[in-house]
Image (cartoon, rainbow, N blue to C red; front, side):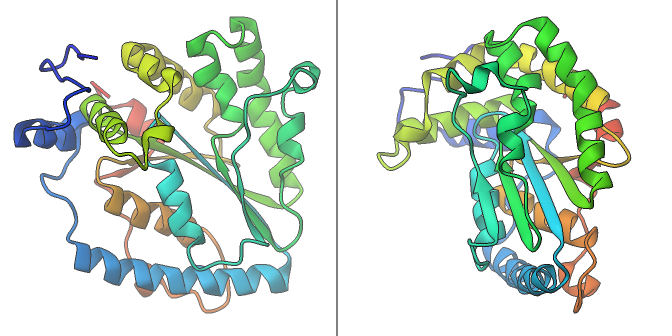
Length: 284
C-alpha cells in the first residue's frame, strides 16, 4: 500500500532515515529528537512512586477515577495505559477496552455498556477508547448515523456532569500524532511479527480518511470540552514524552497523601495543550 505522502510504501520493511525524521516532526511536533532514555527512566521512576502513593490514598479515601484515552489508531493509547498500571494493583486499577457492541447492546441506551465499567470506591478505570467512539470512529467509518452522533454530542457533557456530581473524577486525554507518524507506526506493525495483530483493515482505511477524522475530532473537542470534564491534548509523536506528561497531567490534578510536586515534575507545555489551544492552531 503506497501512501500519497512521499510515496511511502507501507509494504517496504526498510525505511530511510529521512522518512523516519519526517514522521517524528509531522503534525508540527516541536522537538527534533526523542527524549533521552536515561532521562526518561529517571523521570518515570519518580512518577511510578507517586502513582503508588495515590493508589494507597485511593484505597483509604474510597475515591473513584476515570481516565479516558482517545486518539487516532497507533497514537500510543495502549502503551501509555501500560505505564500507568506498571506498578499498580490491577484488581483496583482496571483497563476497559470494550469490543464492538453485540446485537443486544446495539439496542440499549448508548452509554449503558460503559456504565458497567465505572469505578467503585477505591478504583481507577482507564478506558482504551470509550463512549467517544460515537464521536470519532463510528461516524467516520459509517457505523452510526449523523443523527446518532449529534445526539451523543449533546448528551455526553450531561452524562459526564452526572458522574462528576456523584464524585467521580474524569480525565479525558486526546493523543495527537502526525499523519506521517501514523503511517510509520502502521509500517512498524506490519513488519513486526509480534505486532501484526494490532493492524486491522479499519486501521488502514483510516489512512484514506485522515481529514474526516480531523474534522470529527475537532467537532468532538469543541462540543464536549467542559469545566467539569475538560479535554487535554498531548502531542504523541515521542512516546516517552507522551507517557511522562500523561501521568503528570493526572497526578497534578489529584490530591493524595505524600504528593510531591517536584517529584512529579513540570508538565511540558510544548506538547500538552487545552482543547481551546489545540483548536486554535492551524494545520493540525
